[in-house]
Length: 287
Image 1 (cartoon, rainbow, N blue to C red):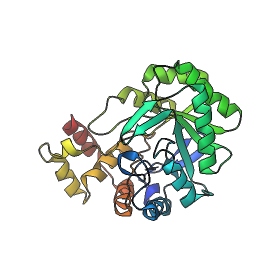
Image 2: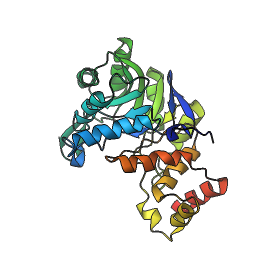
Image 3: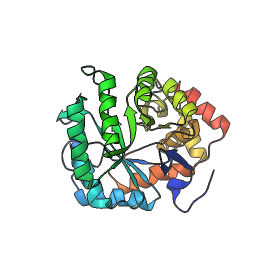
Image 4: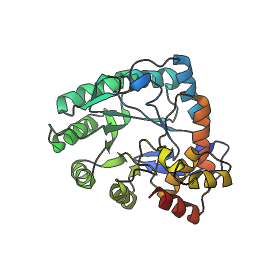
């Protein structure tokens, strides 16, 4: 594994479209209020987390217009603009009805308005990576992807990604526009997107696993994860992140947090080296 003074770079980098990003990234969902709704209880603290992430070598930050809604994007702009080499990826296509309540809205009309709103909040003329947040069963998928292609053609979006897709939906999207990233739920305990990940691996498409730290059940199952964490002088969460980084070279974990302390812990997982036996044993223990 490469070494670096900045731990986020220790796991190496990956080309995402035209951008070279360190493979330990940051998800900016949890810098908002409870239920991913409203303002954080400590706005200055949230901005400190974002700045600390960059100090640690994170140069890829994932957000969405629905985080808050709008709050996460505004905080990112306040804390980091003019970004200076940090890639900011955002998403459109999800509406909020309250704390913890989400619903898809992926009509071309909504996606255009959502993109324009993100451009204003992030204070940019072009979004580095714009992702379709979900699949809206009320709207033909081709229409939603086509809307993003139009935004790209107009110069509002540099690169396009998709989220919460299966293999067929990824193929449909690719038939319309170049897809440079996929963001699906994936972690040690939830690996239903294995085939999508394998497709990304073979195509060189970045895979951004959301909810990457779901280790609770595994940690209680016989203590095996406790044992390997102790061997590496690490936490269970760090082992879970290290496993993701070793699972595929296109994996770009985006763990999120609202505290600097937890951020430091997450990012330093990039420096852990797991043996092949470790990786296989962790996967087997997770079932």
